[in-house]
Length: 528
Image (cartoon, rainbow, N blue to C red; front, top):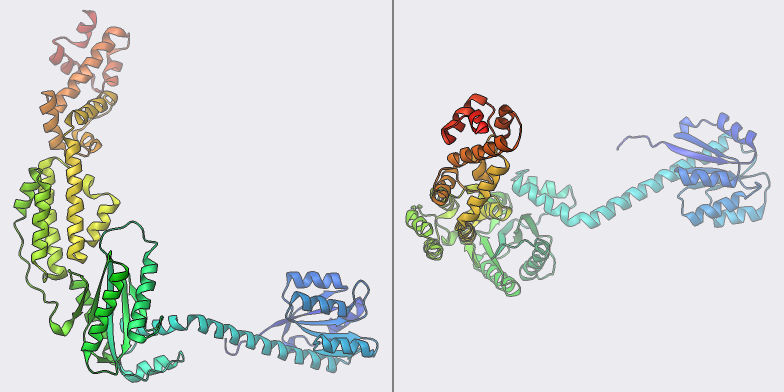
């Protein structure tokens, strides 16, 4: 941060304890921006400090037992510690001085060094540390810029286009200059590239590979390189191509768009790609144009392998008119699913201009008719619509005709499968009978039992009575009374406890129901 004082630390190494304490007391450390002073009295102690603390400057005596100052310096070099070193010695030894120079020691002083001389040497070391830190910071910034230059550049354009940071050319140029870019071109041809898989696939690991390949294709066709910073992701399966336009003829770029689609689908025939293009615009109109292209992409419910040029009227929304969905539902009700899905497909194929809003209305109308159908078939909606795949298809259904068809097709397949299971009515009724017998002591209700077999309560009642000849409520009563009769004859349990065991908390009500079914009160029946 600008104006911030950098505080440093220093390590003093000398086997003479008094000498170390003397230096600590006489030098003006604060004025030299030294905030932490470490002390060591041999090489081993100094090594320990280096291993546990950052050291900026070291003042070290040369002559020490158990490892000289030069031995310590050699160790520091081998361990690659970044520290400015000042050596002290009591002897004017040429060999010491020569080794110190070779080891790139900052200064070499004779003991006892005058206070002002020592402070001056330490200040020189402080300046050197600051210079080294500045070089490191600059290198870090250079490394960051080198590895993040493309991201910074693309973030600049995303801010301009999507966050409306500025829309005047001068403001945009000033914004670009702050990150080291210059915008010399004022005309651009923005292009939106959207791709999608033809069929739903649970595997998402390949999506990043598809994006990488498509970016390379775009870069090669539009820029003549394998990678370009002007091709970047703005949303899932969506690229923005920011092509500087020296040409006045938009047809050239439309042809390139068709070329990239052809190349892409030749590599990946299971995918579709669509390009959206409008005009060659000035930089200050980029944001508006890109948003128009994205709106066109949203309203394009065909999303086939084609180039959509907004000026060519390729996209035109017509009013939506609800088809005869009741006819489709009647076919489904009569188990003619294949015919119904063909009718849906024929309708979707016959219209290509209803847009996103029209497709949303179609979806809502279809759901409304579907709920009526499911009620007639005795199927609860959540049993068909709740699984993860159906939720994903439901969310994507309004993206395109293909997505809508895929959702309805899968939906009808699920209804078909579920209806087939419902045809196994005996197994459903048996499951309900077993549930009643195992839970008769609890409060039983029709809705809870219907949820157990994913049926509508009304439909469950219908198939149960059709199979058993009596209603569910009468079956529950008969099951409870039969259990009570067995207990009355085979145990000495009190009538109150027996009533509770078979689901009646009110003894008077139990006696009344028991007599209605058997012709006797519980007490009379036990005494028979």
